[in-house]
Structures are given as C-alpha cells and as structure tokens.
Length: 90
Image 1 (cartoon, rainbow, N blue to C red):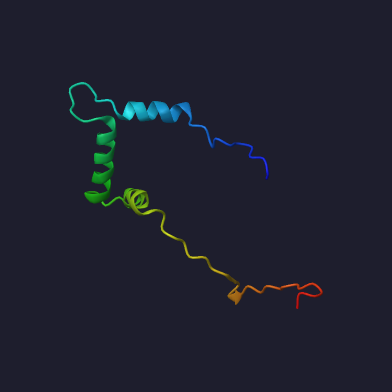
Image 2: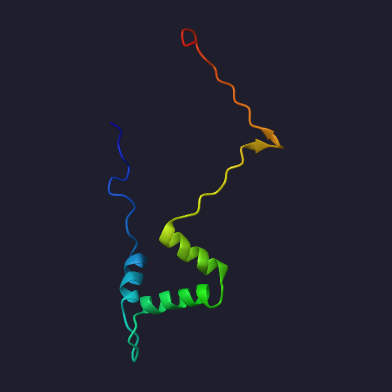
C-alpha cells in the first residue's frame, strides 16, 4: 500500500474554531446569537430581496451543488478518441 502524506486530513484552522465559537455568542442586549442573525440576514436577502447569490448559496447548502453540463464538442464537432489495442488484445 502507498503512504498517505496527510493521514488525519486537512487540519482545522484556528480561524474556523474562533468563528465557530463567536457564532454561538449573543451580543449584549439581544436574544439571538451571531449565527442566528447571520442565517436570518441570509434568508432575508434570498426571500425578501431576491438576491440570486443568497438563493444559490442556500440551495447548495441544502441540496448540494447543481450539476454542470459538460459540452463534449470542439468547434461544433464531436470529440474523437483513438483506442490503441496491443497485440493479443483484439
């Protein structure tokens, strides 16, 4: 078997940890966390303001990225492939 250069995966950055902790805090005098306010703002942008980027962001988080069509044409012509078969394979 091969050797994995990073067996534990990508390390979590300190910034991710700090942001995650901060999102759980409630600002003084408010009953919502920063995370709740961020979600509320994102939903307002998408629903009330019709912000296309906000809509796409929410959609991708809920349903995954929308598959993109791949055009297998070059200059309007189909892509041609050549298959080389060695001796005894035919």
